[in-house]
Amino acid sequence: MLRHEFETLEQNGITAVALPRIADPSVIPLWFGEGDAVTPDFIREAAKRALDDGLTFYNHPAGRADLREALKTYLDRLYGIDLAADRIVVPGSTMLGIFMAAGMSLGDGGHGIIVCPAWPNIDRSFRMTGGSFDFVRQRLEPDGWRLELDDVHAAVRPNTTTIFLNSPCNPTGWVMSSEEQVRLLDFCRERGIVIIADEVYHRNVFEGEVAPSFLTVAAPDDPVIVINGFSKAYAMTGWRLGWMVVPAGYEEQMNAYSECCNTGAPNFIQSAGIAALAGGDGFVREMREHYRAGRRSVMEILAPHPRIELHEPVGAFYAFPRIRGLRNSLGFAQGLLAEEDVGVAPGYTFGPGNEDHFRVCFAKSNERLETALHRIVRYLDRHDNDFG
Ligand SMILES: Cc1ncc(COP(=O)(O)O)c(C=O)c1O
Picture 1 (cartoon, rainbow, N blue to C red):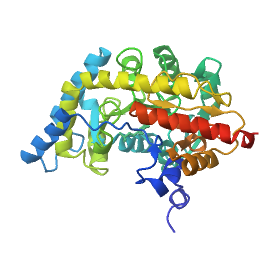
Picture 2: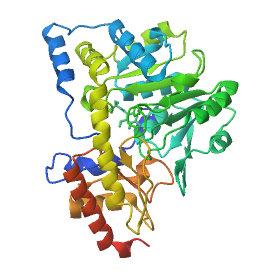
Picture 3: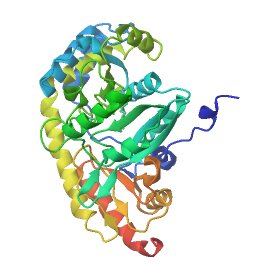
């Protein structure tokens, strides 16, 4: 009765594993992409003040002018650019930005490419456009994950309109270099292919302050839509606040589009966003050291196991280990949950070729994380005979 794309939509593998025990306190949850630190005080206070000031009304559908100016100032400072504030749109969550970008660039008869391993909500968004798509997988080389641009070029068809990529990458931790961005952009510019660059983990890097961004290499009229948000940098996953930077000249269309999606992000939550941008750098640095400790624990406890192949992630806050001989990542995640009360995400849900992987989020308090990692090792040892 409803559209085929909707009728055949399946729950992603992360929630498929997690939902049955989502509220169970005995589980150590490494399955979702968030830490256990609550949003910093000064950000929460800004939202409370905004509520007390009565910011409960509709506002500009593309986001409040003061937040868009604050984003311009922030992005200019981070990247050394001079971005036009009218290219910035604050529609609601980062996820909504991805969904909107998919709808802006892909449609019935069109073809998209998703660089994977990729967070499963991306392919669901692509599916809902009615367009077709293929995955292009990063390669796991002896020195870590890498995107071979020739693989992307080979997947392009005459009707390809869109390429999605996420750097720093959930789940592999791969970070695309500026040189690679320039090369991909040259290729796409020539063919009029839109790049959707999901940069939501841009502050989650272990070297330097920020990951390379398409904003520093693209001209205002290039076919690039950059998606970003507050969730991962400022521990604001529950606030549903993100932004898009779209090519110049689409102000009217973006106002109209955002109006019929969420009519912009909630007004008082935008006040929290302004506070985060103005005062959040210290928190970002503090969290970086916390995540570095988590990464160290993963590399010390999990990586040396003979069944595990794992390279140190360069960005984001996930590890995506391969288990040598694993044939069923869902079975592994469910078995681990049942026997060891540890929640991980099964590899299969990150696109084809990942059935022998699983993902852990290491943005967690170190003691609980290490307990969970030791339990994973114990499970691997106990089940060694099951892995081919
Ligand atoms: C790659 C990627 N993009 C986008 C998002 C969505 O972010 P938000 O929760 O801010 O909508 C996530 C969240 O996990 C993510 O991992």
